[in-house]
Length: 283
Ligand SMILES: O=C(O)CCC(=O)C(=O)O
Image (cartoon, rainbow, N blue to C red; front, side, top):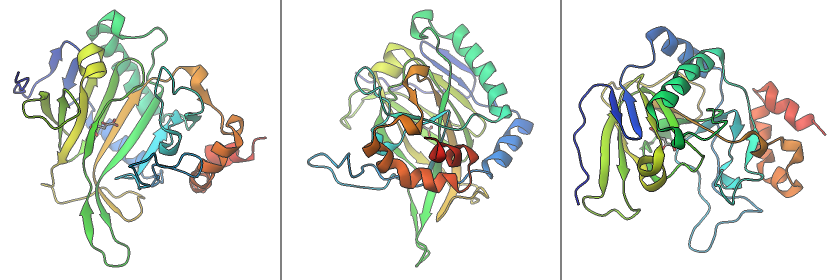
């Protein structure tokens, strides 16, 4: 079966998918980009001493620098993965800046009106956010650039709808059925525009389909002026998700071996973040 359908450049309301191409206002966009300059995104490794690569896999750096708000799901803690992987995975992070808090009130409102009630869990709130920086890594010695602006097939396992806002170059985003790169497995594909909002949820788009970013355009030939080391950022994506309060843990309460695995990241974050500096001193 060919699931492919063409998308029109307008607000879409489908069963489990919502898209608004110009959701974020110019003034809000400017405020968010200014605020982003205060962050120092980090490069994470997928595995760690106490969570080594499983057989057939190897240690690797993530393709892009990241920053998390609300709580930080370190890659080496294996991300939040209910129903089994819910403990010791989401470490309390920084709060959202006010511009994002305001946007989220609207986004949560849209979600509650546009999505089926059974697809929005009780207590659902978009309390955690992954900020992905897409672009090219730059070799500090040779200056050679490598374009890493893509994300392979995956699911977001947090419960309920996920909302995503994008800035910069357009990204080609696909929902696909089945993990293998089969022909005609594309459920839906669309370009995610600068300042757009996408929300997806429910059985089809969230639970059954995988999603991926195939490529990010490079038409504007300019990058964001951010503090991301050895990297040229041409797109930024915020993905907002829900983690129940009881599954968010303070750093000091993590088992000691997990504290030691993420300690280098916490130290790096603490250089510029009061929140992480404080978390490291709490006993
Ligand atoms: O960059 C995007 O549009 C999607 C990011 C994504 O798939 C994720 O954060 O899980």
